Image (tube, rainbow, N blue to C red; front, side, top):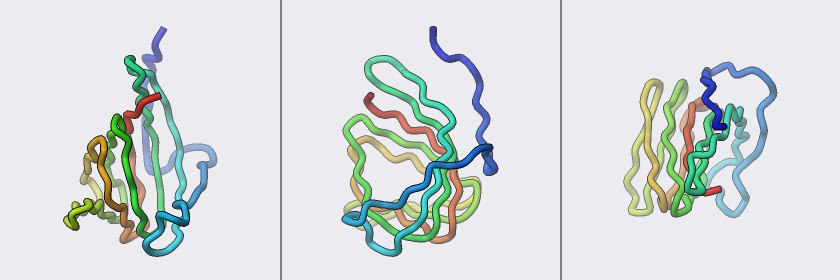
Length: 125
């Protein structure tokens, strides 16, 4: 039976977050602390899973590379960030704005002001 419960995401999630930092070989600037409140992971079928939660990060900049089935949609609740593509252009987002990152994307993620965002990531199991 599939999980049909509702999940509410907010800037103040209950419980302690998972804490990490970008891998050293990916760092471009800083060594930001990242906090993740993983709210749910749901199988979608065909080997895909939907991960949802809230993420907070200090200013910094690091390289990112998405897998061939990985797709993310995030909405900024507070702060500012940029997603840079490999060609040098970028999209910037602040409170109330969202960015969709497609499968296979390569570029970098830059946090300009401590950012809190909700996320939904689809990825292969």
